[in-house]
Length: 283
Image (tube, rainbow, N blue to C red; front, side, top):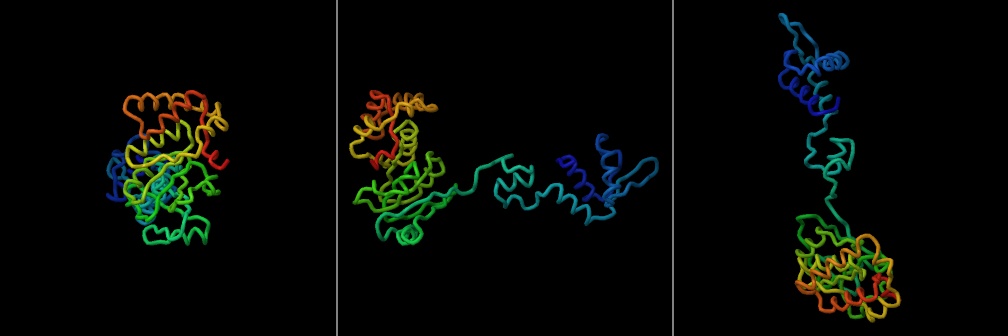
C-alpha cells in the first residue's frame, strides 16, 4: 500500500475533501473503500447514481499521509537518512556520506591548523581527525602533509624524517576525489604522498598530481634494495594490479613520468616482478 500512487490519492483527498468514486483508478477503488472503513477518516457517500469519498477527519488523514510518506523536511536530512525514510533501506538511492573523516597526527611542536594547535591535541589525545566535505573550503596549515596508505605507519612514526614538521594523514588505501579536491583548497608547506610501491599507489599519485602538480612522492631510503629483498610477486598478481601497472607504464612513457625517479621504480618492478608494501620503511 505504501507507494506514490496510493499517497497521491490520499493527498488529493486531503486537498479536495471530496473526490468522485469514478475518478479513482479502478484497481485502487476497492482497496480505498476497505482502508477508509478501517481508518474512519474517510467516508463513502452516495450522490445521485454515483458515490464519493469524503474526508471526515482531516487530522487523522494528515497523520496517515505523514506516516505512509514521511517526506516533509527530508531535503534537510542526510542522503542515507532520506533513503531510510523513503525506502526503509539506507542503501536504496544516493549512499555517499556527507563527511569523510581522516585520522591524523602532528609531528613537531607548534603545528597549527586553522588556528588550532594540533601538536597539543596529538600529545593529549594521540591523534585528531580532519573532516572533509564536498564543496568545503580547505585548511590553512603552517606545516607539511604526508599522506599514508596504511595505519601501521600512523601508529609507528619512527620512519618520519627527523626534519619533518607537519601532519601525517591516513587515507586508507584509496586517495578519493573528495580528498584530492579538498587538498587543492588547502594550504600546506608541501604535500607528499607515501603509498605502497604498487600499481594502486602509483595510480593514486598520478591522480594526485593531476589536481596538485607540486605533490611529491615519498622515497624510502634504499628502496631498490627493499624492493628486491622484501618485495612480493604475489602482490603484483593481486586483483588488477598487473593491468593497471601496464596502463600506467604506457601512459607515462607517452606523456612523461610525474616524478623522474618513478621511471626507475617502475623499471625495477617490471624487472623483478615484485611490488612493495610501505611498511618496509620500518625495517
